[in-house]
Length: 355
Image 1 (cartoon, rainbow, N blue to C red):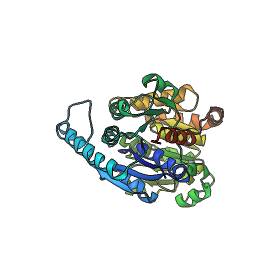
Image 2 (image 1 turned 90 degrees about the vertical axis):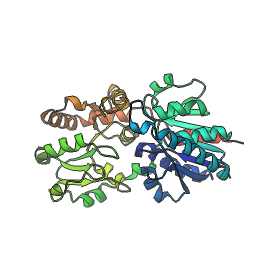
Image 3 (image 1 turned 90 degrees about the horizontal axis):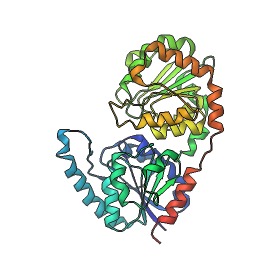
Image 4 (image 1 turned 120 degrees about the vertical axis):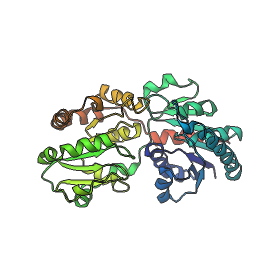
């Protein structure tokens, strides 16, 4: 039996593609372990998967000055030592990384221990963690055709992003009951990312009186961002985070408003969900979500609006307009050429693993 270590964490987008691979890896009879941080979202998301989880020390590497820049490299060095010990203990045939800073010491340790590794880059341009890891990897999977030019030619493979198969089999009536909704109004699903977005939360809540005249609203607002005063508002249902119910809620949604994290938008594409993307501002990120959103807009899959120019009236008009023209976006998504990402990545894992 072949052994594989999965790694990746920090946000849900660095974890859910790994979870999407689990059924195929189990069917292919891989013995699976996971290396993540001690307390990151990856530990929480992997709890239900019943695979061995190993926490290591993890530090963020930044492009800007922060007092933690002095302590975090020491955490990475400690994580590297812990990862080497885990490589020697678990004896994997291959490591698969979904990125995030916890993955850097794992990939470096794999190289040190002569274990081949594969990295997956979801965004249009590689993030800092993957840039550091790429020289030590055997192959680099990517999500967008545009990404290939940023990667070493002999390592780059266009695979798309693995999507959890259960997302495609949601039951809208289960979600309707969960939310206490009727079938008389269409449903908006607001997704601010796994950590939530204060800007999106505040904007949507400010628009609620107008939105609820036409729509019912499901709002995933992030941990600690529930507005208790709105709990009894008819036609509005808020969640900190949505787990196993996500399949059903996607099935119920008629229009999705979302950040533009690569995995999130790939799920929208796979589900053919009309969507409005509000990418994370370049002032608060390296601008990867803006590039992701522009790619989807160019292909006719999404409406994109940058948060710097959003006003309540403008967003309300865009919501109405996108809903009215929703079939145009559904048609574009249905006509897109899709890759069976899970199958392609599994094949690459089998080819690259130590024989």
